[in-house]
Structure formats: structure tokens, C-alpha cells
Length: 151
View 1 (cartoon, rainbow, N blue to C red):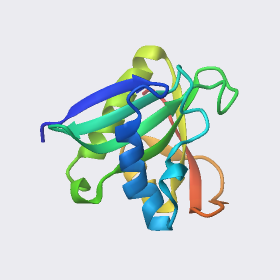
View 2 (view 1 turned 120 degrees about the vertical axis):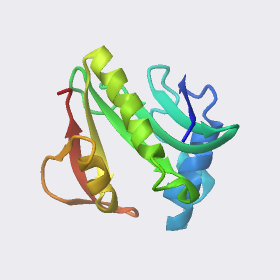
View 3 (view 1 turned 90 degrees about the vertical axis):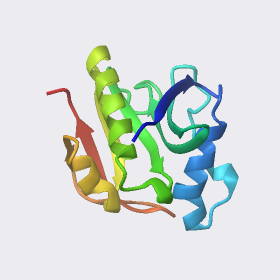
């Protein structure tokens, strides 16, 4: 499926990211639109990646720089990954992860995320591994920390 992937930094063009986050990650939990703005989104080193079908945003993820999240050099956090329900199962998420993998390889980054329990098999199919025990993020649910490293 032909999609366009666009990348922006900080709050520049964050509207489409927040739209997808709301529909997939926040509305189902009864949260408001304000919950779609994450700490660190405004940082100019934060990268927001959006998949578009024509002009419609259909998927997104955010890459948080190490100094904002993990404090470990070259370890970037992937967070807020989401694909609209109508587009799930069509390879959109995989294309987003492939884009991020190419970026990480070119930059020499290691990636990590806190994956919702339901998303773990999806990440595992793209060379992500569970590290540590299951934990709960209040108001959201069970998660596993996962890591990806360049092969």
C-alpha cells in the first residue's frame, strides 16, 4: 500500500500526530484530547513520524531523544505509536517501524519502548525483544519494556 511518511520536530506540524494518538491511544481509555500532548513533544530534538494516505494521517510514532527520557547516550525512546483502527493489519505499522529502523541504523541509535501488552507480538515480529517484567502504567494498563538494536 502506498503511503507517505513525514517527519517533523518539536511542535512543528504535531496536529496529525495528536489526532491519531487521540483516536487510538486516548479516546478508548476515556481520556480527553489534552492527554495527546506528551512531555518532551515540544523539544526540537523530538521527532514525530506520521504515515499519510493522501492527506489523511493514519499512523504515527514519536522518537524521544535520550536526554529527555532514558539518560543513556544513543538510546532513543519510541513512544505513542498508533495506527487508526481502519488501517490496522495493512502493514502501516510495519512501514513506520521500518522507517525508524533505517533511521536508527544510520544514526547508530539503540531504540526502546514501553509496549502495551496487546502490541508485544507486533513489535517482536520486527526484531524487538522484551527486557524485564510486565509492569502497569496507571490509567493505561500492562506494558513490557522492549528494545531494538541494529542487526
